[in-house]
Length: 446
Ligand SMILES: Cc1cc2nc3c(=O)[nH]c(=O)nc-3n(C[C@H](O)[C@H](O)[C@H](O)COP(=O)(O)O)c2cc1C
Image (cartoon, rainbow, N blue to C red):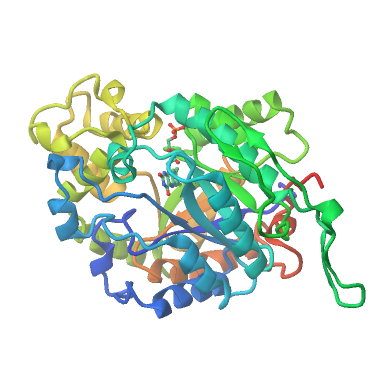
């Protein structure tokens, strides 16, 4: 039995779930997605359920690759509304006390000074609970919204490395004890402990100092989900938490070993980042009820919507392939977006539907069983999660939402008590910053 504990992250989207297509039509989904109460309630539910963290993903464009138009996506609500995450997390932080608060920001389209300041602010206002999901952004539509050419994959990561040097450097332009607010001496802050950064690099120039004192966590917690070789190398250098996709326990173990090799290569062996595969859980008091719930969720899903999402992720227009013809054999290498994720999806498709699987098969599979789905009663779900954890296929999980907040409520009601009983999850600690509570490496140097 391991002596560390599972990290549990609730994977949200602002506004509705696109990890389970059509879930916004489910009666367990709160329809008030443009109201503050929706997010306040979601944050409170996730905290009450016993998760360690609430995370929101993001993209900066509507899906427009499928049929080269946004119309199908808008009609179905396929990732077309994405509210600004730091505004939402500011709101949630005022109504929660313990959970980590994760937002996705891009190193390709933003400036490091802006990102350093935004997350330092959230870290202060949340008393040390800010988490940044670092993405390099993967599609053409986003580039068009920012008016820049779509950068090649590895050069996006080179830029991201420099971006992180600037952001973390800016967080340290204020030494930990520089901010005094000492009325007796009239010293607001110690000028000897505030510094220029003077960064001049290939992609960025930033003088500093930051206009926010050092965040309570030193560096807010860094999260990354790179799946390519270059992505794993980047994650090894920077990430405290790493999201991965793995089709099953064996592929999870392989990804886990590869990421640990990458940690060894950069010398981060004492407190390496924690590795968290994304899974969807449908749980009920009995297996039959859980299966009924899953069947109902699947009935809301539309195979074409899955193809819209996959077009966005891959950069390939799946509307241009005949629905009943086999997919091209070289479909993975045609991908301009995330090759690693598309390769895992196509691998699963061919394993289930054979080598001549069609576009229609792909849509159907993606609509109901993309990624890892764990369905069952509380004991069955806990058995599966523990097998991954004890088998060193992961250090915890990113639990993807379906109906919201219904699926997080179910996880808190049925699964977390069972995981506590088995000793792999503790009663949530309340003291210290989020970084301290997860036992993550202290990263700030001064
Ligand atoms: C659980 C999970 C969440 C992710 N969230 C986002 C996101 O919010 N925005 C985004 O642009 N990419 C997101 N990604 C994609 C990754 O950032 C990354 O681009 C992708 O995994 C491909 O990795 P690679 O660029 O190393 O090939 C996510 C990936 C995973 C596995």
